[in-house]
Image (tube, rainbow, N blue to C red; front, side, top):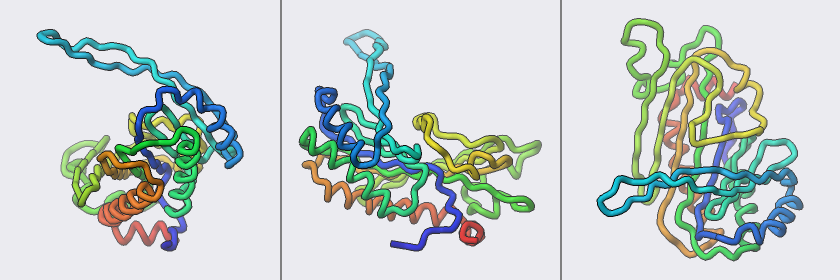
Amino acid sequence: MGTPLKKPPVYLTLAQVRFNPILKLADFLPSIQESFRLAGYPDFDRQHLISIQLTAQDGQPPTPTPVQQERFQLGNVEKTHTFILDGQTLTLQSTNYGQFETFSACFLEGLSIVNDAVKLAFTERVGLRYLDRVMPQQSETIEQYLVEQVHGLTSRLEGRPLYSYTEAMNEIGNIKLLSRVAIQDGPLAFPPDIQPGNMRITERFTSYTGISAILDNDGFVEGREAFSTAAVAEHLDAIHKVIGTAFKTTATKYAFAAWDK
């Protein structure tokens, strides 16, 4: 367990497991919700989502079909940890990360609750994702915090910089890592596939104004495996190490010194 930074830039962390479909998930919900409540997650919300599924037929263009999905949110009183459960995935979103060991243990506890109720058969995907906001202070620049490879072209073009975006996809062993860096002027933003809802975000991230960068590191392992909490834990640990390397590669020594003051 490493020593955490005094002012870490992470504002949202996610862990997710995709498992075998549970079509009768609602039948198990009372037991699952009660176990989460006793574990410290009494907040509950049921959501209905509409997604579009494209169905292709021979010789015909794909036909969009609306599909209704149901998912459940189970969170703590402080609104800093929220589990999202649907018929094929469990996700943990946290705005109070702390350290990897405690975050991972929290997610695995939730996964064990689901498994105890439905008896999971296999997993197909294990993922870990970190969102960091890099916020230069007065008299500093974003370039001091990030390596040159992710600065983009804005500093070499005329006019006022509005937006810069870089993305890289790498495969490290059985782990795929998608790393994105977005530099822009404006309020705190989230990727379009993440909905924090009413989660409580640390005030220093929401009150900051000016040029900032969002580091989005998304690592995952795909492939069907017999369900094992221990195997999921091993995947999360391996992904965490890969993301840690990517984070340290993207930020400068100056940045780490500033975050540790």
